[in-house]
Length: 267
Image: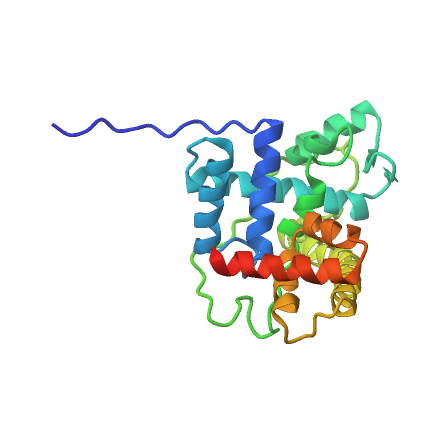
């Protein structure tokens, strides 16, 4: 007798699960498991394992990929309207469009994902900046050397099918859609904006890394030392940076780094 087929659990994205998903996805991006615009096979494997371990759920890769695609659509729409919306204002305090109820109704009919930032910025925007930042490539290919693409990036669902724009719709797109491929234009625009918007955060991150590694050197850890090496691992996590910087003496900082290195060797 064949075993009964187990139906997959329906994915429910409450606030806690949504945050954990973004944290796990961000971790995979920072580990280099998003070589292009989507996670690699290893990235998804780790994402499924980490997410299920933290939430106690049993979601499949397909469900997590659908979540990734949904968030990408929301983030892309937010970026687009923040910069490109014609005839509308942008509220920096609430991080969303300034529009009346009628305008919002028309916008949501056209681009459903923007409902996610009707009252303010999308949830977990800080993590989505990292998740959907452009991958670093060498300029000759969209794939990092030695990495094999395993799936084809998908176009956001709200770009695939779009109802005919009513005459009262807010003018956010070309007046003659027959002459312009809106999907391609939108994607090129978003790629450009995401690259530009990430440059400032990248510079800030680089300055922060340089500053804390200078503190490492000051406490006596040379570039070739075990303590310097473990610092590069530890300080990817902001709480470790805080612990280190809270220590009052150079000796204490160096001793802490040494202990962390010894702990790593034992484990």
